Image (cartoon, rainbow, N blue to C red):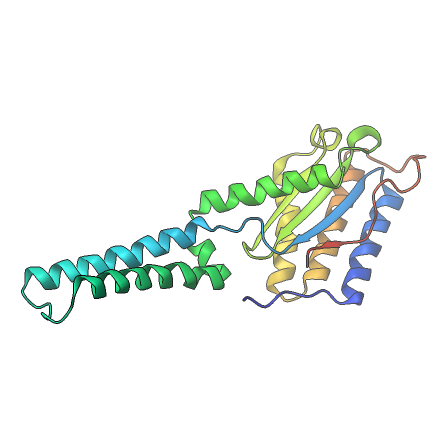
Length: 217
């Protein structure tokens, strides 16, 4: 099992204060969600299992063709060994999560991360804000990927290139082993984007979305 990344209480407080600062100065609402993984990627287990099985059977076939297979090796032994080999191929990525991602095409991984980010957007009801100006910063630990999703009211003015700058700050902070600082900087960038596009603070209802960072266990 991989070691889980942990946020201290100080880290959570830093992120929460950055969100509160954004919401005090702008009309936006912010949610930060830290996911352990965006998918189980179990197909990678079957893929590696098939590879192990194919290699073993190819080896047996080659040894048999070259008359190098010991006569004492029975068909039952070959079958049981083949089953054991494929089981090992399945078990290795099952217990080593990062290996599952390695054996999954990059485009599929990115799609799974984006899909879960969109699910979280709906689950947290980020769409249910005044003037549709909610923002989600979604971080997926296993895949080392970040998604920034803005609601329709914001995306009408802010381009994807701007969101790329935001996620870049998150990644920079994680690489420097200062994830909370990176997330806080990204939130500050969102604040700048909102203000630059006239999403200034207005009289709005009570805090529509909790400012606490969501962290999967």
